[in-house]
Image (cartoon, rainbow, N blue to C red; front, side, top):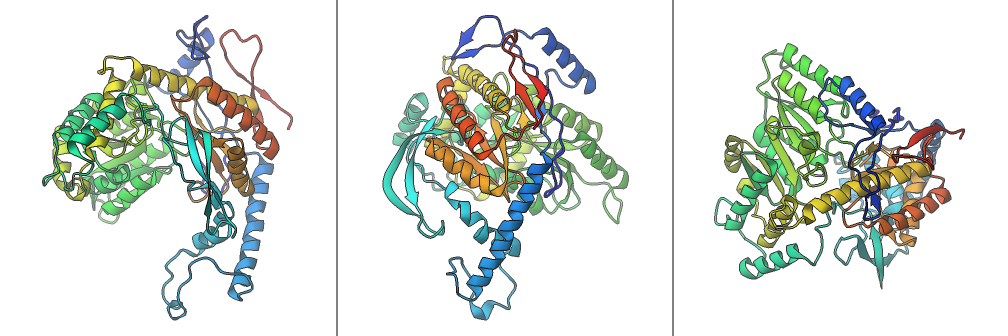
Length: 561
């Protein structure tokens, strides 16, 4: 369970059980085919603890932040804040040049356009490490990318391009989970053919003259893929959430939202006008308490029953690397007669034996999820989003959703990219490429996570999540880690406030089926070196690999540091 922003994490690491087959090796990995006795025992224990809801082990680790690290992180932000105020004082008296936007003198008595702290943070803290973000890419976002080199001569307030290209940078940041973001192969050929026939733009909405046969084909395929009655596609993943939630709930309704939900879900909930209550991340006791209170007490003041109760959760949480406890959420949803809205932006294609997301991962019935939302921007290498569910739901959204009524239709080549990649995942293209990509991603994920833990880094999230957060904590190490990795020809994403709580800065790796074992080993070697250089190996519960492990298991060993 995650602490309030500004507080220290207090989480216990969970021991993971691994098992492999005897002798079969593929793509450099030992391939799993049968569970070891220890792993089986662990699974039984887990199922017992969760009332038989889980059909597989569910292992997530959120190691406690070392006290010294937490104290030094606060001290670091304190020093930066003091120097920030000093520099603001110097700018006020024009001793230091002021680069940031300021309001005119005659408007200074007006209500401020910016939140004071966030504006202060941007000009005094963010600007120091701004060179780690918005790096221009000039290639396909595959396993390797080309980056345009740039320099700043005014401390990151502006950049100038040098004209040089940094070639072959290992890409550890893109959401290219299944490797379909490429400019060769069947997807590219199919998209190019449709581009010649249909052009790029549709120049109309679906309700007017922008409804193509390709859109109809896509929606039927998505419904089949998800195992639901109907589906609808949208041109933007963010707007799929922010514009559809207001169409589903309104005044007199209650939204129960996970505290770590994506900004699109938060915005959609706020725009709806419904009452919003937040439950602790992935904490079923917190969710059930809110559900009980909602049933017992009803609406404030009037005590009337809520018109609807809608639970908002994500499949994979993109900053924590955790997977929603969907079996328990569904059990609570059925018990208290609530509705469930599941955002599978990061989990669709990336989880489950057939790539059908977190529902497939847990072996659940798609009919138990009232609203299934996802995006095409990650596993399918395209853009846009979808909503799937009962036919009555989709028919309602076609006429009441702002995204459906006012937004321009999906571009035909983009639609074809989605259709071709989805058919590949489903095996309808006559090959096993999709299945192999799903399996390769799962192997890459477990291998990469295990190696980082063995090195002594604090890694958050579920062992099966391709989103891998490596904790940095201290503000100075955010920029240093990103720069040092780029020096070693590895592109990574570093994340800090306001995307995370102010003391929980991290680097976020995204695994891909396009990554070979050689690429991952190269990245791991450099991460290990940078970790030693910047002293990032904070873990006190290091996973120590045993030389004689018969089943590739890992064990925790307490260390003195």
